[in-house]
Image (cartoon, rainbow, N blue to C red; front, side):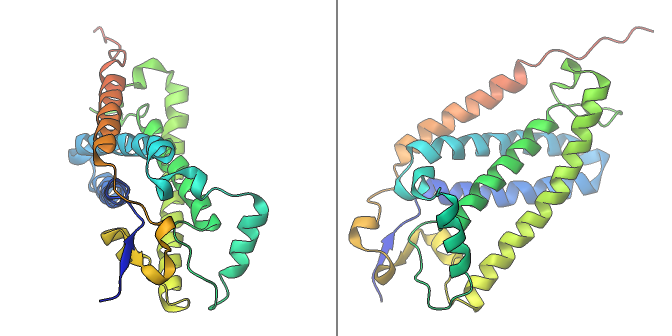
Length: 229
């Protein structure tokens, strides 16, 4: 069996697939209607924690999880775009500049989706924890953004999936399996570029901080305004 080397750490891979499940669940519960609104809110809190984890992990995680390893200037991004149309381009070890840019775009969009959800209400029984902290006008704008952003996010996710399929069919590069196993063929990853471990203890600490932060954020929200009859 060809030798493979570790590139994607386990916490990063778990984040990726948990985000897939969370966004899928959020879409399904939104479509199912009122009875699933509570579950939809809890999925939003979970998603917010995932985004917070990924942002912190982008600074303290292993080499290829760090933003500094894949965020590049306009020149490198344009060069990466040109390489998209070449079958002969060499596979990158981590994210290429275009892929890295998409990581940031999706994090910002998903984060904005989760944050805006803290302010919305269904005007029946369920409200985000911070709905009472803003005027009805602002809450309405947040709800408008929440729906519009998710519609755009669906198209961005579709583009992401199409890009993966394009790489598999046209460029003969499998991007899915490494995000499951964490490993890439040794001919594409020199020993110095591989990571030695997934740094699980550090990841658990970061995850605990993010979970505690989201819990504090939700439980510290102002109580709903009292209604007098």
